[in-house]
Image (tube, rainbow, N blue to C red; front, side, top):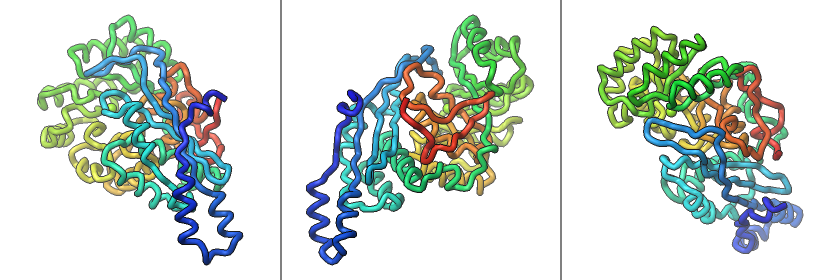
Length: 376
Ligand code: MG
């Protein structure tokens, strides 16, 4: 109950009513009532995720992630959404709440007008991608619930084709790495964060314990292209399947040079945010890492998957630390992905949703409509 009280309401009822009176006199009474009753109500509240382990990337360490949980209600049906704001991406509780407060959906009557609704939300301000994703995800959940189908079915994807998800191991000491690898028994593929001066030690430590496939994420941590290429060959010999964002995203020519020569695929992550970045990434990287919080949500992510596949690029579906809400939303796309990194909800200790589950390392979609979640 306290959760519900904490939600901030932005119904815009009066504005909506005046618009309806101005434009609806010719409608039959029955239609008018139906439209008036079906107004959107957007609610949202800040929440803080606690991470099970301190998480270290090449540039930062942290033990919590701020998120905002959204609900979009229409005609008594509620869609759930979420914004996740890791600090290095520039959004915060404050910025997301401010952005969501500006949204006025009173001029929309029909949740199926997704392109119009999300186009309106996108043009309110530039940036604010996680905030926009929180509305996009809630709208998808709502529309899927109205259609009584999960999105992977609406899109026509085969749920048996979901990939295994990698489990992420941050930069750490050999003792901690050994412990973490032992905890990842069920996972078929490991994702290892590299980009400091301990890269070879980390891989060698893990290889003493397991010969599972490993992918590595450098988070732009390598600065020399010849060093990056030498590492690519060294990693290839040790069964690493791809390298994510080896060098800074601005170094387009160097990243393309590496991709041309690397024995294993390169994946652009920081370099690939939204739909128009997919074309720019073509021939600079072998593939792209799509995350809902970077690309404003499921609608644009779906377009990115389609475009990347048409260009012959590899597709990875990734995540931030998120609850099962945003993770389940992303997992709807995963049958089309070559790789998935959807462990975000497994890294936190205070999830508030139950949704997509990982069974024997594989992304396992349920049959719940929308994004496939229910509140715990
Ligand atoms: Mg990455």
